Length: 400
Picture: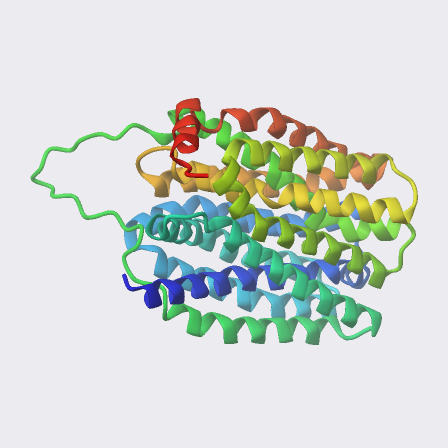
């Protein structure tokens, strides 16, 4: 692969990560308006958001097998189509005040992103291997950058009472314009397993889920995905309902969270290359613990803004760094990334309705203590995601 080809592939992957972020940032910042249009309670909104989780879980459970069968490119095409098309449908659901249609649209969005998740991370891990340096944090940073762009646009549209329908139609159109040319740079066959010669004896491979280190990585991903997802799902509503901000300012706080995630992810690759995955993950999770605690127990809007920055920086590296560790943890990286990503989507599956139902009883600030507890688990578990000898060898080989 030439340097130009590799650069084009990196740019294409960056675009494919950007589009789901753009969609999430757009719809999350309009969550209060969509909730009002649907006339939904907190618990009912949790069920609507649950559509993302169900679709994501279906997609993520099937993605690994599909990548192994047909390669990453076809899976990415289908996943991107679901992501792009779901936004206009969600806009129509808001205009009609239809909670079932909104749930279905979010399920299609989740299915698209779930299908693409393993494929994009297998592609990213392959580019890391070819380039010889961390790349997954940067890719996830492009996702966060998309949430920033979508969030800023959402703030403007919220402040001017721009139609949710036309807002999300525009998002779908932009996504289509970005995705179509990006697909041309994605090679065929990556991640696809060669067909087995039926005449040759079958050699059984050990199941990756029996690897205790990979399971520990899955725990870290679950915890940090829960911390990230709880902000994506509920942060604007916490700011509006508990901190007294209007809809536009609630969206602004979410954009601040997204900016913090973006900064953390774009700087994370260099930190991982210098210090290694375990310490970076531990410090990242600790920052999330402090930020969530301040949101839950603190008082005052200024403190809440500082807490959101800590929460965003802390949640930024959990998913990409742990997925990178999963792909490098042993043979059959596609299956390992798939299993680890499934743990993350389990958090997205359980998180929205769980926090919604708890929030109905104790308030959302009390409900996010679940996220705090899981992030604290990740602080401890991060130390075990790589063998000590691998970290010592990496340090010994570092010329600095």
